[in-house]
Image 1 (tube, rainbow, N blue to C red):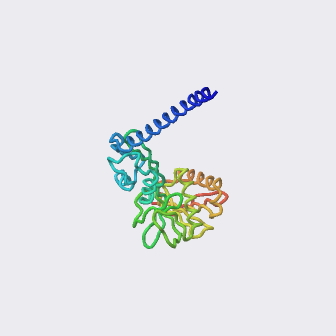
Image 2: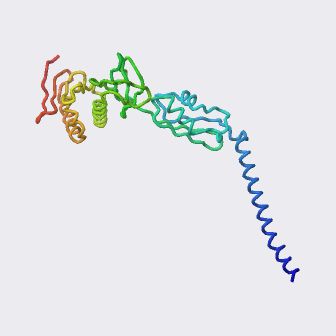
Image 3: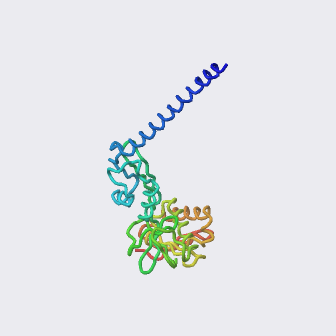
Length: 261
């Protein structure tokens, strides 16, 4: 009776020992694989590709990331590198960094696009469509950047969203800029004046003063689009050397010529 019990016990312990051995082998294999991945030169960074960046140079983006050639791709702190790029360059809106097996890093960059310029302390603050301050400049050089007049800003931090000053006026201007862009008119607009929020004015094509409406009316995308479509139709019929006024708030908007050259 006792002999049979011992035989059963011996048989039951053998599978357990084998299972422990296999577990140990698997653990050792995982540790070995990790050591190989972290210390093998096979995975050292050989290529760093920057995609999508136009305003900010690839070299600066790589410098900000602090990712360097020869660094093991699995030792790179992707989250830290991404945040350093965004914090170090106001024009960078979003960054995606991927490890490409076995030795490459790929950075996909989305940039903020300046659309407006607000006067600030004798210079201009360039802002994107969401109201982020991108840089300070003394003059507006790019054709698709519109001067936004009549807005007072109290304090501005480059790289941050503007949060102090006449924010309602800024919001109205940026909303109008978005609609102008959709209607392919933004390149024709020299400035938007929101000093009087009941009577927003645009200067178009360096010769046309446009009464576009009140800030409240501009909050209606449908009404604003209707007026801009009307404006496009009127501009197409005006001779290129003719300046004047257009009141889009009137029931029947017409062009009022000032002079002929």
